[in-house]
Length: 435
Image 1 (cartoon, one colour):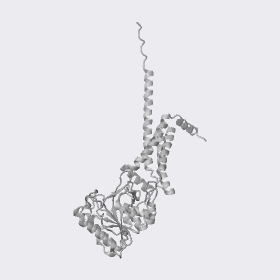
Image 2 (cartoon, one colour):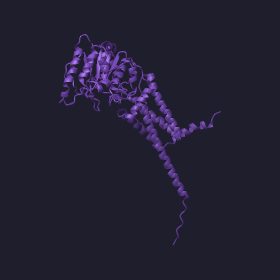
Image 3 (cartoon, one colour):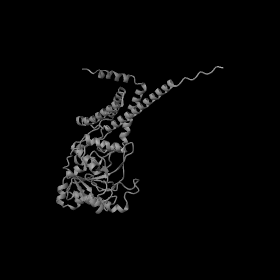
Image 4 (cartoon, helix red, strand yellow):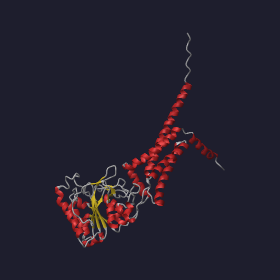
């Protein structure tokens, strides 16, 4: 039997939409524009809380995948070496220590490639001081170690050295001077890679545009170029957006026996070192605790879909994602704008048709679930990355503003009704006596 209440519900909703004043629809158009502006702003200036939410969404909707790690290894500078051993908790890290690690990995270890993830920036970028005099002997020792392993005809080990960039708001970068500039290294065996990370660490850094019109490889790009240059086109920016990758956590890497501590590299015998790193690409980076021996978070920690992770493991995730073919291009900016406008239109029509707050809450929940599902489906069905967190933030902002306006209108009508009631209940004024 047909329910007469449901039969009348749809016409009543249409009537409520039709009776909305022009000011309501003007506000809807304004919110559509504000939604696009909010999307643009939050994309470039994402608050820390929103970044954390984005990482959680990414990890839940696109579970962390297992990377092919058979050809990779990571050496973390250990607490043992940094706090108790030869590094003596010094910053900058001792360069001759890094040189000895490079010799071990390329010599007895027979690694195919060693990439260093440390800041080698000069103390003065105006060219007045390339390196502090107290560290010159160490820097010379590092350069000698690099030349030694790359000149060895029995080894095919390549070296990727780190460089940092200065990138102002126009996204054109300049290369910062390093302590190794001016040193002579074999060009076919030694390359440079930019270790700057993107604001959104879910994105894989590609080539950085320079002010002179050239580009410079990221550390990831330099490693991939040395291993399999045919994979490089996949890293090119897609309509201004770098591709996204999928990730492994610190625990995943340890379970795959990819991670070595620096004191292990120095102490294990040559045969074991050969077994661990032979024919692999090896990244060397910071891994000691920030406060003291085994106390505090790991230094150089970054948020990622796999949880907090050292920067060197982020770089390994990027390299593995490129080599495994796990890069995901982002939806175009125009699609993002279209989704923002769609949010406002859908919410405006539903809020205009509904008369009470509980129904509005239900619509809010349904639309939020829709955008979460949209992120999942665009990834699974179309291989494109759509970030639902910013549209959902815009959705809640629109809902909040509409609720505030609704409450304001409700209070205004109550005040008008009270004023009208007071006017009716007010006793008539007595007639004035005529003289």
